[in-house]
Image (cartoon, rainbow, N blue to C red):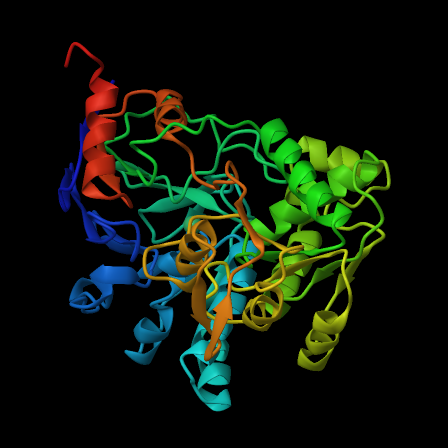
Length: 447
Ligand SMILES: [Zn+2]
């Protein structure tokens, strides 16, 4: 096992260094600079969220790189791109084609949320598209005359990639966010690494460095079926606040599987999130990148992200009509932690009714409305939502096991496929998670 290094910003290379500019001791703001030989690469340009955001300043060292490389389209990896572009960035931006599409959708949504004018949104996207260069997986390209890079499958969301960079003297691999093997829709993270040269530094995410996911996908399907059956029997609505990128599509996959297996009665399922719909369209456009199971479903004529009773709600006024529809039905709407979006009005209407269920499908951070609903649900209390005091009488449930991040054993398994790793720099994890992972990798003997 190579040396795992937690919470250190700079890691030497034979002809340069790797420097973590963000996500050093936390899970947001991923940004890493790789200087090797005469070439300076910036990998990711994420936004900092939560408590770290207060005293964060955009790092100077991000500006003078020769190219930007994006691992995937989540905002904590691409959300500071408008700042970089506003500072006059005019060099290439490399990513897989789906990552470029998802990034454009994410940026548009986040700029609109920040009340940017239509012109600002248009200008930013135009500059981004002009510099964007799509790179297929497993295809080596020249970042400069001496430095080459390639994207390898990371299995986290569609288009997500680990990045392999090499110069005549150094070889660096950056994990990006790593998904779990066997995740629905997506291919597994890459395990085929060339053994021709040693790897000087691996920069690896460590979000769940302290955790072990115990639940299988069968457990998830079983829980989902049970929760749906219970609410449908009482003619209620199942309201699902869902993140648009990744989580909404995984949910559709599980619902489709239940429908195909005849385990879900005929009830309408509304997907009431414009961004979730846009991302789902991107998934469908790049279905050639699906894993074997989903490709097999497609070849049997079953679209794993679609089924008969699913309907898309695009316009705001149609969302109002969906709210008036009687149960039983299922509504998937953003945002994932109920911080805004169409889920708010569904919740204001639906939370006071005991026959309904609010089903959370992801972690609800401290201080978010989602967490307050979970807390209020436990004591049948009230929450402030959409400017109203709302009684929480609906059932509040959480579907565990849908994480899009590898746990500690899966992280170490990912590393174990790499020959001759000299140093592993941990990032994208809380200090406790990083230290727990280092201790776990050393084993009980501390060796
Ligand atoms: Zn991510």
